[in-house]
Image (cartoon, rainbow, N blue to C red; front, side):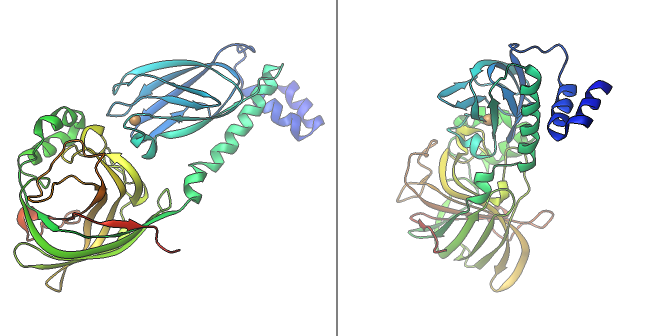
Length: 375
Ligand SMILES: [Cu+2]
């Protein structure tokens, strides 16, 4: 140790870095040993013990520390290899021979919905040099550089926006039974603490065939800026089945993240979820959304303020209801045309239920459209 420091002091910064890295390298490691990387999967991230490794054979030991099934895939440089599905609490290994380059590491479950929700990171593989020590020195340094960059730069810099206009028949959904209880049952089993509350919604919840036609308008713009900088702007006005006039003014996105209900800055574009995906409640059919958002809004009834903290969930999604009686038509609706605009409004945390059937407001615009807003 003191010998290394002496060399570093005499020879400048380059060698100092090498010396620090050498000191951190396990003494028993020799060039040619397979590298070992441990990975942890959970909702909604992939964590690697190393962000940079030397080229060669590497064994990933992957633990699912989350509460729903996940898997682990490494993709890049012509390689695309994955584990099978790993149940919560279980582990799997994946041994690969990787050449230099950057690899995408992610969870492939749910047609990339888990990846979109944040379960992705990258792994850098650097050329293994003759000396194991110098190779490791380079690794350690680029590893910490990457940690400083943190997150996913591509996502942060690439602001996407969508403007949605509600159209077609407007319907209010009233409390009732969920029409696909048998399909939802095995998914609900994976929902832990939330299961009981969700199971009561199977019998009498907001996703029912108890529907009435009403009138109203809804237009909004949402910006997906990654992390927690998303934003939203829009107004909905409708007259509910009892004749009350409601107005919702979207205020700000909801950024808090809870298990099974990731919000990711509030706005997410192009997500495949619900139903059999185990992402969010299965008491909504499996769908693909052009945009999904979670926000707070100001809610007025007959011109009087009800709350400044109404909790709002909006999706422009593949059609789930048929024409005519607007009954739910599919358990897997993900291939249907994306034109159903759903607006769900719930009381804020700790606030009383709304004076509406079931205490919530749930309105759909069945033939809606979207566009890229002018910047
Ligand atoms: Cu996953």
